[in-house]
Length: 317
Image (cartoon, rainbow, N blue to C red; front, side):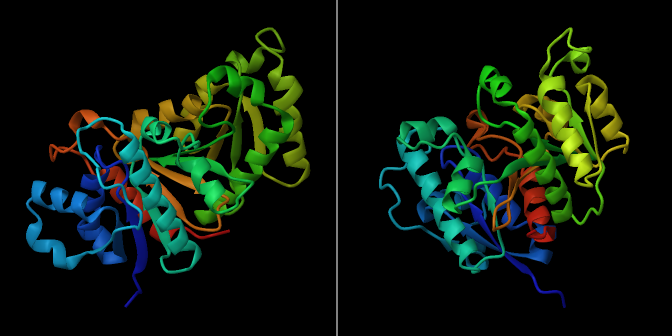
């Protein structure tokens, strides 16, 4: 019998849908066939989730680890708070420690609130940056998968203005290398990597901007010289259609929404976020805290389930 992977599921922001989707995913049949889940979060919060989902009789069937130093006054009032930010961060830290110590094979992080982190005085703009610091990782990237699309982001959680000014040949080349590594994690050999343009029509020979000529084309040329199967920059308005139809294995995108809008359009309920470059395996659902439907038993766990199954199949490269 194939050995099950032991995977830690963090509860995410306790005021959001994280505890609910974590619990639902942990009891999913496909997950239980392949994974031994460990829930990481405040036991009091999970007790409320068990009650809400009428699963009280199944508590004995799941392991729960409540991290040390959890805030005493956590609320589930469906909005960001400092207490929620501190609680969600402590769960992530605990999960990372377990993964680094090889006590779990991977971690799946439920959604957190960036505003809650900010209210708690924590500097990280999101999961990705937090995980990189906690694992002392310098070279990392955010990849998202959904249906036939895979995208990796050159810039992540920053304003569009800052994203544009951050694009340079070094950044783009590094993300092309990360795209190749991401595909290796997915067991895709010699991946076909496409690099998206920043400007409309790939700049139209400089008429609509010169970032393609100055930064993106040199990075693609360097990658090609290194033997990486890469093309670009390609206009984004047609590129995603080509990738959707199987022409490319992964797209290097210049900014957050360039990649996430098309991916969420086709796979909103099943998209998976994978952090590339870490010494551990980490995935997460590709959605937020959904405070508007939190603690109503209405949250769809499909993306959390896909994130768990993906974590069980990935390789550390």
